[in-house]
Amino acid sequence: MNKNDLVATVATSTGLSKADATKAVDGVFEAITSTLKDGSEVRLVGFGTFSVSARAATTGRNPRTGESIQIPASNQPKFKAGKGLKAAVN
Image (cartoon, one colour):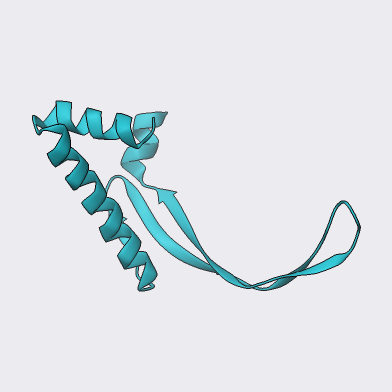
């Protein structure tokens, strides 16, 4: 499922127009993104938790040349599925 499929599903299930459903989906994505940028986490009870994890700088290797390269530190978004989502999938 891609974003357009998600918008169509939301529009169908809620009775909203596709334009309104697009605004709603974009709003949810923007809210999650801005909260994660601030370093907070988003908990959706029964669905899951979005969080940010700090990844330390490491030394890697270029597989073609064998040359060592420095991989910079970064923040990585993570998602942990909640009990309700796990139960629905299994």
